[in-house]
Image 1 (cartoon, rainbow, N blue to C red):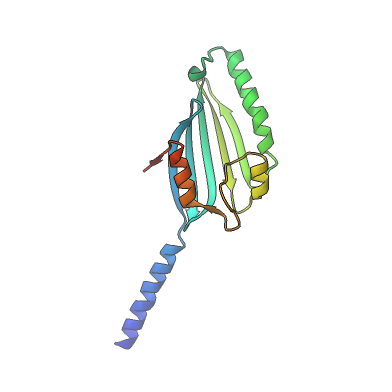
Image 2: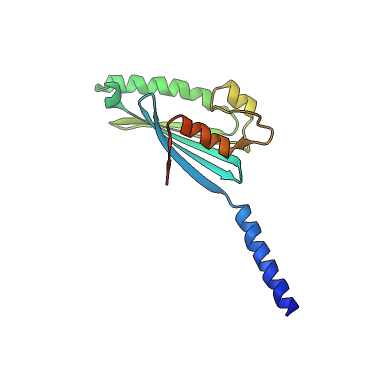
Amino acid sequence: MKLMVGCLLCTMMLVLLSACGKEETKTFTGEQNRADVEMTYTYKGDKVLKQTSKITIDYKDFNVTEDSQKEELKKQLETESKKFQDIKGVKESVKSNDNQLIENVEVDYEKADFKELRDNNVVDIIGDTDKGVSMKKSEKFIKEQGFKEKK
């Protein structure tokens, strides 16, 4: 009987411990400067591990109709894009089609240097980063910017 209770307790502890260490994601959507933005946070506990942003710019929202205008807008975004290319822990790309430009930015906080992220205006990091980026603070901040959680 004692052995059975002991095994049951061990099993319960394993289930509880594995649930605590689970990576989770939260996605938020909103609009900034006439662009649709989708932000996804991957986190464990209160620590953000990775932040992914997808920014979609519809040409029509900027009255861009000519191919030459589309190309010029893409070049401007690609120029801005270059500043992200050599930053440790950051992946960034720009794609376009006939109707829109799409920029994807991924920041791996486990690899990135917070000072470099701040200095290059890659992300808005609030507070002390000695313990990483807080999911609770990130969620509060992004909701204050008008973003809604996507469920």
